[in-house]
Amino acid sequence: MKPSDLLTPTPAGLYCPAADIYIDPVRPVARALITHGHSDHARAGHGAVLATRETLAIMALRYGEAFTGSQQVAAPGETTRIGAVDFRFVPAGHVLGSAQIVVEHKGLRIVVSGDYKRERDPTCAPFEPVPCDVFITEATFGLPVFRHPPAHAEAAKLLDSVRLFPDRTHIVGAYSLGKAQRLMALIREAGYERPIFIHGAVEKITEFYQAQGIPLGEIRKVEPSGRKAEGRKAFAGEIVICPPSAIQDLWSRRFPDPVTAFASGWMRVRARARQKGVELPLIISDHADWDDLQATIREVQANEIWITHGEAEALAHWCGTVGLKGMPLHLVGYGDEGEAEPEAKPAEASA
Ligand SMILES: [Zn+2]
Ligand SMILES: [Zn+2]
Image (spheres, rainbow, N blue to C red):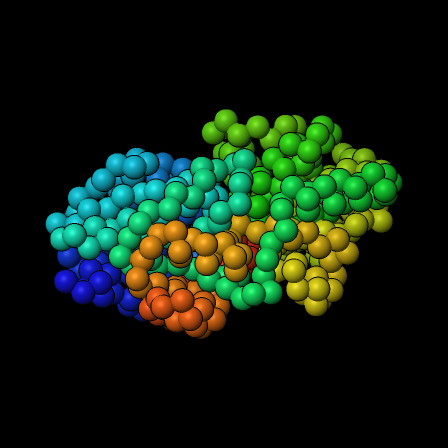
């Protein structure tokens, strides 16, 4: 059997004919396997969804309980047979509940990584490399310019700035699923003990992380404008975490003389930071950087590397230089929520 007979790229996403399922479909399908809760991978409106317990819970939080016709939990490491194909969910280290999906049939093994990273993250299980024949990878940061510095050093920059400007509010843009909570955990590890303030859009997911036993310390919601419960002074010297889209809108004007920060792998590109009016860029990413993409590809020992999205051509070219077959799949529909905030509104869920 050819790998492309086991998993076939289609406009709706990767399709497995022998099991009649799609992985991370971008359109509503009868049966879907979902790698993680970011909105470009996890959409509402499928007939049935198989995913980790956390991913199912995150989808229900964002889209409502009726996000799918039926749901089934994929327990970590456990094999689920569909048709004659075996599927196994293995941690991807990207956000809470994120998994790679190992697809096995007649001795052929394909690993669909979904989004992943290799750097330690106190809020989710680490990526586990699985040797395979074909490794399907993302390439969000698949260019040599993208080398992420240690995340704890970036978090320390934020805390240094807070010490330096004790009267200013630090408003930090961070994606609401994963990045925001990872940043909270990082600054707690660095010893920051004050309450952390959050925008309402970050609240549900943050509470879910806490309910899973991830210690994030005291989190307080910034009340909607109009209610003058807190004076402007209340936020002097505090850290406020919000979705990136809120940095530049009216919402942010309530804070006195704010320092605007943004936690993203894209902050490596100074022009992007300037363009978004970011004063304090923090290079913290939930995606593998150029070195980690290469290290992972070597580690899984696959001969063929299929590349779903991101800098597919550049990574495919690198594969060729080390004797591997690299193939861009040109799958459409995966922007990296990771790095492009989706305000998960139910109405947009299946768009
Ligand atoms: Zn993605
Ligand atoms: Zn993602």
